[in-house]
Amino acid sequence: MPTPPPTLELKDVQFRWPGRAPFELSVPKLALAPAETVLLLGESGSGKSTLLSLICGTITAQSGRVAVAGTDISSLSAGKRDRFRAEQIGLIFQQFNLLPFANVRDNILLPLRFAPDRAARVSDPETEAETLCRALGLPNNVMNEQAGKLSVGQQQRVAAARALIGAPPLIIADEPTSSLDAATQSAFLELLFSQSRAHRSTVLMVSHDARLSDQFDRVIHMDDVAQTDRNAA
Image (cartoon, rainbow, N blue to C red):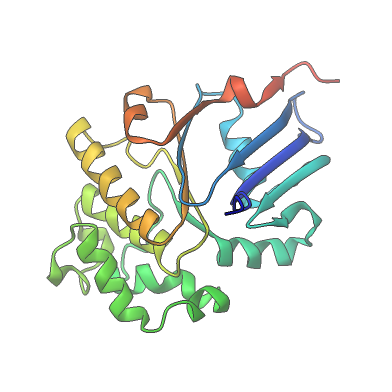
């Protein structure tokens, strides 16, 4: 049986911030397989945020290949990158970025409004939202609650459901467990991974907390996959 192509692939990537303090990031090679869970560890200032921005297509490299689900996003126009990101990448932000006055259901369904192909993968969006909430351990009566009134742990699970709906190939989680205690972190990751694997979605989580390592299929250190140069001319 042939090996499936990687969900995420970076090759010979070179990026330099224009018109700012000297900073250059290079990534010779990085590949993530379908349904793989990967923890990317790095200290503050190691280039994690720049790398995530390259993967999401909010910035583009001067050279090299950044491919998500087989598409080199650096070859797309800005508008097409935005559309592609909405269709192919689910995002879990550190601060969750929920709409506080919207209810849980509307928050989860929000990505589908901007991604028709992703929406087409869901036969009944409201039922899928409810199914994800139950799978992630949220109570049945939470769907009509305002997101801003939920606990931090509940908001985190709503953010995960929003990222998972429509089964995007790649889930990116940026320090999503930093505000939780160890037991809650572990429980959340178990729930997230059970759903991502069910959808065959790859998870790339960025953190500085190595204590989470045992729960992932693979752990990558920024120093092993990327080089940074703060003296780039």
